[in-house]
Image (cartoon, one colour):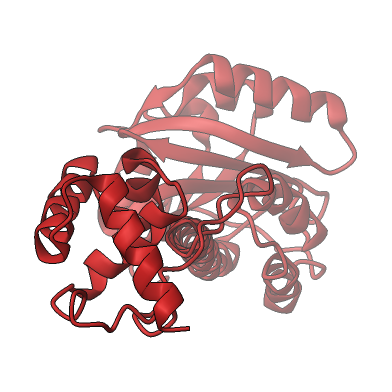
Length: 305
């Protein structure tokens, strides 16, 4: 998009006017620089009209474009708070569909700022807003985010020395381009922060699950003792050599008086798996039951220590 593109059908070639010297491109550039320090688009929307008025415009309207509707968002008029309130009230009460013959419709298609002269006698304009402001001339510029129109800027500056003119139209167009870049940056930052927050939440969940698997179950529940290596309880006699590492872990816990459910919880296996291990243990040790298996374990442990 470039401010050098024009929508000539919306410009009155008979415009003649003087532009007050206070309103220079440098002042608008300074306004844009101040807005770069605003990191949320909500706050940005409130600040835009104020900063443009500081740059020399007299009345500024900032509107959103949503589903091809013109929705007034914020406004500012230099030295006239009552007019600002009236402009906001009427604008919000009369949302306007952006379509032909509205000059703003041509502006969005051309992606270029416009100057509308004598709008009070122009049937194409947004009549409720014009009736409040009663401008002799106004300028407008579209704001784009990633090639999609999202907002409209309107401004005028009635003074004894003149009003807005073609050079102001061009300056507002450049300002709108810079504003779009700031809004794109803010949206990108918001998405990045959302992704960072989501990643942090994910890592917190992973840490919690890892802590659970590592035995960090909280202060109210003592963490399970890690399975002991096979050589901690040396069941290395001829009757126990055939036991697997897991079977030795089950036998150690059984000797501590643990139930099948407690053994399952400690080793993170099912009770059915515990029963299966116990059958294998009793078969390998030649034990007739659980008590016999534990007794054989204790005899072997005593004889080896």
